Length: 345
Ligand code: AMP
Ligand code: MG
Image: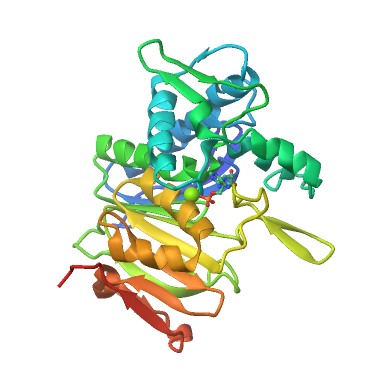
Protein backbone atom coordinates (compact mmCIF):
# COMPACT_ATOMS: atom_id res chain seq x y z
CA UNK A 1 0.00 0.00 0.00
CA UNK A 2 1.33 3.40 -0.86
CA UNK A 3 0.32 6.29 1.33
CA UNK A 4 1.41 9.88 1.36
CA UNK A 5 2.63 11.10 4.69
CA UNK A 6 3.18 14.72 5.55
CA UNK A 7 5.85 15.25 8.18
CA UNK A 8 7.61 18.46 9.15
CA UNK A 9 6.26 20.12 6.03
CA UNK A 10 7.94 17.56 3.80
CA UNK A 11 6.16 15.27 1.47
CA UNK A 12 7.33 11.72 1.89
CA UNK A 13 6.72 8.42 0.20
CA UNK A 14 5.89 5.69 2.57
CA UNK A 15 5.06 2.06 2.00
CA UNK A 16 3.82 -0.17 4.80
CA UNK A 17 5.42 -3.50 5.49
CA UNK A 18 3.57 -6.32 3.83
CA UNK A 19 4.35 -9.73 2.37
CA UNK A 20 7.87 -9.67 3.88
CA UNK A 21 8.70 -6.58 1.85
CA UNK A 22 10.62 -3.77 3.50
CA UNK A 23 9.00 -0.52 4.54
CA UNK A 24 10.48 2.20 2.32
CA UNK A 25 10.65 5.85 3.22
CA UNK A 26 12.12 8.83 1.42
CA UNK A 27 12.67 12.13 3.19
CA UNK A 28 14.84 15.19 3.15
CA UNK A 29 17.09 16.61 5.86
CA UNK A 30 20.64 17.96 6.18
CA UNK A 31 20.39 19.36 2.64
CA UNK A 32 20.19 15.90 1.22
CA UNK A 33 17.92 13.07 0.22
CA UNK A 34 17.44 10.38 2.85
CA UNK A 35 16.15 6.96 1.94
CA UNK A 36 15.31 4.15 4.33
CA UNK A 37 14.37 0.55 3.68
CA UNK A 38 13.71 -1.49 6.79
CA UNK A 39 12.36 -4.86 7.91
CA UNK A 40 10.48 -5.57 11.11
CA UNK A 41 7.00 -5.27 12.53
CA UNK A 42 7.56 -1.70 13.59
CA UNK A 43 9.85 -0.75 10.69
CA UNK A 44 7.51 1.91 9.30
CA UNK A 45 7.19 3.57 12.70
CA UNK A 46 10.94 3.44 13.18
CA UNK A 47 11.47 5.22 9.88
CA UNK A 48 9.08 8.04 10.73
CA UNK A 49 10.70 8.43 14.14
CA UNK A 50 14.18 8.47 12.60
CA UNK A 51 13.15 11.14 10.10
CA UNK A 52 11.87 13.21 13.04
CA UNK A 53 15.11 12.72 14.98
CA UNK A 54 17.23 13.62 11.96
CA UNK A 55 15.35 16.88 11.68
CA UNK A 56 16.09 17.58 15.35
CA UNK A 57 19.72 16.60 14.79
CA UNK A 58 19.98 19.11 11.94
CA UNK A 59 18.26 21.79 14.05
CA UNK A 60 20.99 21.40 16.69
CA UNK A 61 23.99 21.14 14.41
CA UNK A 62 23.50 23.10 11.21
CA UNK A 63 25.53 26.28 10.94
CA UNK A 64 22.83 27.52 8.56
CA UNK A 65 19.99 27.31 11.13
CA UNK A 66 20.04 30.47 13.27
CA UNK A 67 19.06 28.99 16.62
CA UNK A 68 21.14 25.82 16.35
CA UNK A 69 23.84 25.09 18.92
CA UNK A 70 26.49 25.47 16.24
CA UNK A 71 25.11 28.75 14.83
CA UNK A 72 24.98 30.22 18.35
CA UNK A 73 28.51 28.99 19.05
CA UNK A 74 29.72 30.63 15.82
CA UNK A 75 27.87 33.90 16.45
CA UNK A 76 29.41 34.17 19.95
CA UNK A 77 32.98 33.47 18.78
CA UNK A 78 35.51 35.61 20.61
CA UNK A 79 32.79 36.88 22.95
CA UNK A 80 31.29 34.29 25.24
CA UNK A 81 30.87 30.54 25.78
CA UNK A 82 27.43 29.19 24.84
CA UNK A 83 25.30 26.45 26.36
CA UNK A 84 24.95 23.47 24.05
CA UNK A 85 22.99 20.23 24.25
CA UNK A 86 24.62 17.02 25.52
CA UNK A 87 24.41 15.52 22.03
CA UNK A 88 26.19 18.47 20.45
CA UNK A 89 28.85 18.35 23.16
CA UNK A 90 29.43 14.65 22.48
CA UNK A 91 29.80 15.21 18.75
CA UNK A 92 32.09 18.24 19.09
CA UNK A 93 34.27 16.29 21.52
CA UNK A 94 34.48 13.31 19.21
CA UNK A 95 35.07 15.62 16.24
CA UNK A 96 38.00 17.27 18.01
CA UNK A 97 39.57 13.91 18.88
CA UNK A 98 39.27 12.80 15.28
CA UNK A 99 40.51 16.04 13.75
CA UNK A 100 43.65 15.83 15.89
CA UNK A 101 44.52 12.57 14.17
CA UNK A 102 44.24 14.10 10.68
CA UNK A 103 47.47 16.10 10.87
CA UNK A 104 45.71 19.27 9.82
CA UNK A 105 43.74 17.84 6.89
CA UNK A 106 40.42 17.86 8.75
CA UNK A 107 39.40 20.95 10.70
CA UNK A 108 36.04 21.43 12.40
CA UNK A 109 36.82 25.16 12.32
CA UNK A 110 37.07 25.20 8.51
CA UNK A 111 33.79 27.20 8.38
CA UNK A 112 35.26 30.68 7.68
CA UNK A 113 36.70 29.16 4.49
CA UNK A 114 33.70 27.03 3.50
CA UNK A 115 31.41 30.04 4.08
CA UNK A 116 33.56 32.19 1.79
CA UNK A 117 33.28 29.67 -1.02
CA UNK A 118 29.60 28.95 -0.32
CA UNK A 119 29.83 25.79 -2.41
CA UNK A 120 26.90 24.13 -0.66
CA UNK A 121 24.79 27.32 -0.91
CA UNK A 122 22.92 28.89 -3.83
CA UNK A 123 25.61 31.56 -4.26
CA UNK A 124 29.01 29.90 -4.66
CA UNK A 125 31.97 32.13 -5.55
CA UNK A 126 35.75 32.07 -5.92
CA UNK A 127 37.11 34.20 -3.06
CA UNK A 128 40.00 36.64 -3.50
CA UNK A 129 43.43 35.65 -2.18
CA UNK A 130 43.18 38.31 0.55
CA UNK A 131 39.82 36.99 1.73
CA UNK A 132 41.17 33.45 1.75
CA UNK A 133 44.29 34.36 3.70
CA UNK A 134 42.18 36.10 6.34
CA UNK A 135 39.73 33.23 6.59
CA UNK A 136 42.49 30.61 6.74
CA UNK A 137 44.12 32.42 9.66
CA UNK A 138 40.95 31.70 11.65
CA UNK A 139 41.04 27.94 11.06
CA UNK A 140 42.45 26.22 14.12
CA UNK A 141 40.66 23.48 16.07
CA UNK A 142 42.80 24.25 19.13
CA UNK A 143 40.64 27.37 19.55
CA UNK A 144 37.47 25.33 20.11
CA UNK A 145 37.14 25.05 23.88
CA UNK A 146 34.68 22.57 25.37
CA UNK A 147 33.72 22.71 29.04
CA UNK A 148 31.82 19.53 29.73
CA UNK A 149 31.11 20.32 33.36
CA UNK A 150 29.53 23.66 32.44
CA UNK A 151 27.93 22.29 29.25
CA UNK A 152 29.44 25.08 27.15
CA UNK A 153 31.47 25.50 23.99
CA UNK A 154 33.56 28.51 23.02
CA UNK A 155 35.55 29.70 20.03
CA UNK A 156 38.44 31.88 21.13
CA UNK A 157 38.58 34.38 18.28
CA UNK A 158 35.91 36.51 16.63
CA UNK A 159 35.16 35.29 13.12
CA UNK A 160 35.96 31.68 13.94
CA UNK A 161 33.25 29.13 13.19
CA UNK A 162 32.54 25.40 13.21
CA UNK A 163 31.27 23.42 10.20
CA UNK A 164 30.21 19.85 11.01
CA UNK A 165 29.48 19.00 7.36
CA UNK A 166 32.39 16.54 7.26
CA UNK A 167 31.05 14.28 10.04
CA UNK A 168 27.36 15.04 10.48
CA UNK A 169 26.00 12.46 8.04
CA UNK A 170 28.07 9.69 9.56
CA UNK A 171 27.05 10.75 13.06
CA UNK A 172 23.44 10.64 11.91
CA UNK A 173 23.94 6.95 11.10
CA UNK A 174 24.53 6.37 14.80
CA UNK A 175 21.16 7.95 15.50
CA UNK A 176 19.72 5.46 13.03
CA UNK A 177 21.33 2.53 14.80
CA UNK A 178 19.80 3.59 18.13
CA UNK A 179 16.37 4.19 16.60
CA UNK A 180 16.27 0.92 14.68
CA UNK A 181 17.33 -0.97 17.79
CA UNK A 182 14.62 0.66 19.88
CA UNK A 183 12.00 -0.37 17.36
CA UNK A 184 13.28 -3.91 16.90
CA UNK A 185 14.17 -3.43 13.24
CA UNK A 186 15.88 -6.63 12.08
CA UNK A 187 17.47 -5.29 8.94
CA UNK A 188 17.71 -1.89 7.28
CA UNK A 189 19.56 0.23 4.79
CA UNK A 190 19.70 3.97 5.31
CA UNK A 191 21.24 6.32 2.76
CA UNK A 192 22.01 9.91 3.70
CA UNK A 193 23.35 11.65 0.65
CA UNK A 194 25.26 8.56 -0.44
CA UNK A 195 26.53 7.64 3.02
CA UNK A 196 25.10 4.24 3.84
CA UNK A 197 24.27 2.54 7.11
CA UNK A 198 23.37 -1.12 7.05
CA UNK A 199 21.78 -2.76 10.06
CA UNK A 200 21.52 -6.52 10.33
CA UNK A 201 20.34 -8.51 7.36
CA UNK A 202 17.30 -9.27 5.22
CA UNK A 203 14.72 -11.80 6.46
CA UNK A 204 16.13 -15.26 5.81
CA UNK A 205 19.69 -14.13 6.50
CA UNK A 206 20.55 -12.64 3.12
CA UNK A 207 23.04 -9.78 3.32
CA UNK A 208 22.35 -6.34 1.87
CA UNK A 209 24.28 -5.46 -1.28
CA UNK A 210 25.65 -1.92 -1.35
CA UNK A 211 27.08 -0.17 -4.41
CA UNK A 212 30.16 2.02 -4.75
CA UNK A 213 29.30 4.61 -7.37
CA UNK A 214 30.98 5.28 -10.66
CA UNK A 215 31.32 9.06 -10.25
CA UNK A 216 31.59 9.63 -14.01
CA UNK A 217 28.15 8.10 -14.58
CA UNK A 218 24.63 8.57 -13.23
CA UNK A 219 23.87 8.17 -9.53
CA UNK A 220 22.58 4.66 -10.01
CA UNK A 221 25.62 3.41 -11.93
CA UNK A 222 27.92 1.32 -9.75
CA UNK A 223 31.55 0.37 -10.15
CA UNK A 224 31.55 -2.29 -7.49
CA UNK A 225 29.39 -3.67 -4.75
CA UNK A 226 29.79 -5.06 -1.25
CA UNK A 227 27.79 -7.41 0.94
CA UNK A 228 27.45 -5.48 4.16
CA UNK A 229 26.03 -5.76 7.67
CA UNK A 230 26.14 -3.56 10.79
CA UNK A 231 28.46 -1.04 9.26
CA UNK A 232 28.60 2.45 7.77
CA UNK A 233 30.05 3.26 4.37
CA UNK A 234 30.89 6.96 4.10
CA UNK A 235 31.87 8.28 0.68
CA UNK A 236 33.69 11.49 -0.22
CA UNK A 237 34.44 12.82 -3.66
CA UNK A 238 34.94 16.09 -5.48
CA UNK A 239 32.07 15.20 -7.83
CA UNK A 240 29.47 15.30 -5.03
CA UNK A 241 29.03 19.04 -4.67
CA UNK A 242 30.75 21.62 -6.86
CA UNK A 243 30.29 24.64 -9.08
CA UNK A 244 32.08 25.73 -12.23
CA UNK A 245 33.54 29.10 -13.13
CA UNK A 246 35.57 29.89 -16.26
CA UNK A 247 35.75 26.20 -17.02
CA UNK A 248 37.25 25.31 -13.64
CA UNK A 249 35.44 23.01 -11.26
CA UNK A 250 35.48 23.94 -7.57
CA UNK A 251 34.29 21.23 -5.17
CA UNK A 252 33.33 21.21 -1.49
CA UNK A 253 36.26 19.50 0.25
CA UNK A 254 38.76 22.15 1.27
CA UNK A 255 42.47 21.61 1.82
CA UNK A 256 43.18 23.60 5.00
CA UNK A 257 46.77 24.03 3.79
CA UNK A 258 45.65 26.20 0.85
CA UNK A 259 42.03 27.21 1.44
CA UNK A 260 41.20 25.85 -2.02
CA UNK A 261 39.29 22.70 -2.90
CA UNK A 262 41.73 19.84 -2.26
CA UNK A 263 43.62 18.93 -5.44
CA UNK A 264 43.33 15.26 -4.76
CA UNK A 265 44.50 12.42 -6.98
CA UNK A 266 41.58 10.51 -5.47
CA UNK A 267 38.30 10.75 -7.36
CA UNK A 268 36.14 9.00 -4.78
CA UNK A 269 36.88 7.27 -1.48
CA UNK A 270 34.64 5.08 0.64
CA UNK A 271 35.39 4.17 4.25
CA UNK A 272 33.73 1.34 6.18
CA UNK A 273 33.49 1.46 9.94
CA UNK A 274 31.08 0.29 12.62
CA UNK A 275 31.25 3.87 13.84
CA UNK A 276 29.55 6.29 11.45
CA UNK A 277 31.31 9.43 12.68
CA UNK A 278 34.71 7.79 12.23
CA UNK A 279 33.83 6.59 8.71
CA UNK A 280 32.63 10.06 7.68
CA UNK A 281 35.62 11.84 9.18
CA UNK A 282 38.00 9.37 7.58
CA UNK A 283 36.55 9.60 4.06
CA UNK A 284 36.87 13.40 4.05
CA UNK A 285 40.38 13.18 5.49
CA UNK A 286 41.59 10.52 3.05
CA UNK A 287 40.30 12.59 0.14
CA UNK A 288 42.42 15.54 1.33
CA UNK A 289 45.41 13.27 2.00
CA UNK A 290 45.38 11.80 -1.49
CA UNK A 291 46.51 8.44 -2.86
CA UNK A 292 49.96 7.92 -1.29
CA UNK A 293 48.92 8.68 2.28
CA UNK A 294 45.66 6.80 1.87
CA UNK A 295 47.55 3.69 0.75
CA UNK A 296 49.80 4.09 3.75
CA UNK A 297 46.74 4.42 5.99
CA UNK A 298 45.21 1.25 4.51
CA UNK A 299 48.39 -0.67 5.39
CA UNK A 300 48.41 0.64 8.97
CA UNK A 301 44.84 1.30 10.12
CA UNK A 302 43.08 -1.27 12.21
CA UNK A 303 39.55 0.08 12.49
CA UNK A 304 38.50 1.14 8.99
CA UNK A 305 38.38 -0.56 5.61
CA UNK A 306 38.76 1.53 2.49
CA UNK A 307 37.91 1.53 -1.22
CA UNK A 308 39.04 4.32 -3.51
CA UNK A 309 39.18 5.22 -7.17
CA UNK A 310 42.14 7.32 -8.26
CA UNK A 311 42.43 9.78 -11.14
CA UNK A 312 44.01 7.09 -13.34
CA UNK A 313 40.96 4.85 -13.07
CA UNK A 314 42.61 2.41 -10.63
CA UNK A 315 40.56 0.94 -7.83
CA UNK A 316 42.22 0.17 -4.49
CA UNK A 317 40.41 -2.01 -1.96
CA UNK A 318 41.35 -3.16 1.56
CA UNK A 319 42.21 -6.85 1.47
CA UNK A 320 39.80 -7.51 4.33
CA UNK A 321 36.93 -6.43 2.05
CA UNK A 322 37.84 -8.93 -0.68
CA UNK A 323 35.34 -11.65 0.36
CA UNK A 324 32.40 -9.24 0.20
CA UNK A 325 33.58 -7.28 -2.85
CA UNK A 326 32.56 -7.68 -6.50
CA UNK A 327 33.07 -5.54 -9.58
CA UNK A 328 29.84 -4.77 -11.37
CA UNK A 329 29.35 -6.51 -14.72
CA UNK A 330 29.72 -3.26 -16.66
CA UNK A 331 33.07 -2.52 -15.00
CA UNK A 332 34.84 -5.88 -15.15
CA UNK A 333 37.88 -4.28 -16.81
CA UNK A 334 38.58 -1.87 -13.96
CA UNK A 335 42.04 -2.63 -12.55
CA UNK A 336 41.78 -3.52 -8.84
CA UNK A 337 44.62 -3.68 -6.32
CA UNK A 338 43.93 -5.21 -2.93
CA UNK A 339 45.87 -3.66 -0.07
CA UNK A 340 46.70 -5.82 2.94
CA UNK A 341 47.44 -4.56 6.41
CA UNK A 342 51.07 -4.82 7.39
CA UNK A 343 51.62 -7.79 9.61
CA UNK A 344 48.36 -9.42 8.46
CA UNK A 345 48.59 -13.03 7.29
P1 AMP B 1 32.20 14.94 3.14
O1 AMP B 1 31.16 15.04 2.08
O2 AMP B 1 31.86 14.09 4.30
O3 AMP B 1 33.56 14.61 2.59
O4 AMP B 1 32.34 16.38 3.80
C1 AMP B 1 32.45 17.55 3.07
C2 AMP B 1 31.92 18.68 3.91
O5 AMP B 1 32.77 18.83 5.07
C3 AMP B 1 31.94 20.03 3.22
O6 AMP B 1 30.72 20.27 2.57
C4 AMP B 1 32.18 20.98 4.39
O7 AMP B 1 30.97 21.20 5.09
C5 AMP B 1 33.08 20.18 5.30
N1 AMP B 1 34.53 20.31 5.00
C6 AMP B 1 35.14 20.68 3.83
N2 AMP B 1 36.48 20.63 3.94
C7 AMP B 1 36.74 20.19 5.20
C8 AMP B 1 37.95 19.94 5.92
N3 AMP B 1 39.16 20.08 5.39
N4 AMP B 1 37.82 19.53 7.23
C9 AMP B 1 36.60 19.37 7.80
N5 AMP B 1 35.43 19.59 7.16
C10 AMP B 1 35.50 19.99 5.88
MG1 MG C 1 33.00 13.08 5.65
